[in-house]
Image (cartoon, rainbow, N blue to C red):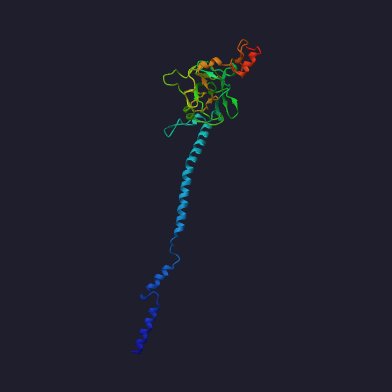
Length: 297
């Protein structure tokens, strides 16, 4: 009996030390918690940082997308233009292909007035250049500054228009066709067309001359109280090519009753002396000349 008791005591001790025994279940759980292969739960701060990074990246992509689209579109248009009109389809994805910014051979085409207007202007009076000169317009290649004397563009038909005086973009600034059209002035309701006469000009070797033009209304009724003359290519000419429009400096058109005080270019010898520049009728200088016996030019 004593021998059997010792045997059972030794067996119990082995079972107590055996990690795989029924008594070692709790020990096995602790080992699992210390297992280095088990994935660790990230801290809250690191989760927030990663989320902010992802959000910033998405915003950056969204802001870059339209810029990249525009750049790619412009480069494709330039490449197609160099390959020639046959390589550029008339329609892309069912939409009309936009006008090219550049003309043939990469030229940058624009119209430009080459004459300054004789001011002031009056209703019913002829629109002329300074000292009675004709008003010329030319087709330029802005890249070289030279007049375009050949090609279909050099023979284009042009429209003469009236623009708002506050169309203040400079000549070297770009404006869109839509911006130009938004500043065109039409006649007042119930009035005659604002311009009367030769409202179309045909280029010859890139040069055109405005014929007889007359304003039928003054400029006092529009916002800026001033007009500009504008010039653009007529519909049906130079399709698919963007030719920048021309415009003059802003000017006032006065009622014809003020023409009584208009200066003469050139003045005639029999004209009153106040018809000369910088001499106002009945002004101090005019009075001094009269007092010295000077009445005519």
